[in-house]
Image (cartoon, rainbow, N blue to C red; front, side):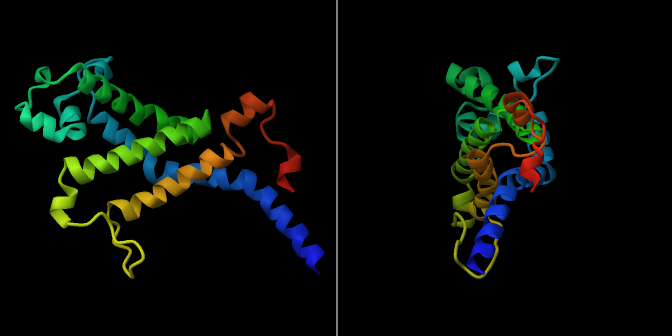
Length: 188
């Protein structure tokens, strides 16, 4: 009986190695892809290369207190501010797309985790999330508050699966880096 349970557990583990990352990428696409792409669109400046000259709103979103102190004059900010805003804007487009298609999945998911952490800190400290509601989120309580840290813990969990497991089945990583799109032995 234990041998059968062990075999079944081994089969489920093999199934999970491909299915769990694929499902994680699907859920990311369904829940967060448009959120990040739309957010990135709000940061673009004019023209085809608008990401190289981000909008005033981009600076206000990423550096709210610095923008307020500068009177919302982007020329009063440093090169550091400009590089961070350009990097953040590009990251908001590139990282989610790489995750959804499963290309450089582990690295992209790790970058997205860093992005979510910085985004959360900006929301809490830069945009006054802590002053506004006085809490970071209430873990281990009876209410699923959907406060920033409660909600984003789930985002990071899905991304952490990708860091640890890779892109899974039907990923470009699998196609480009292992020489096979789907190995029938993985489906057992």
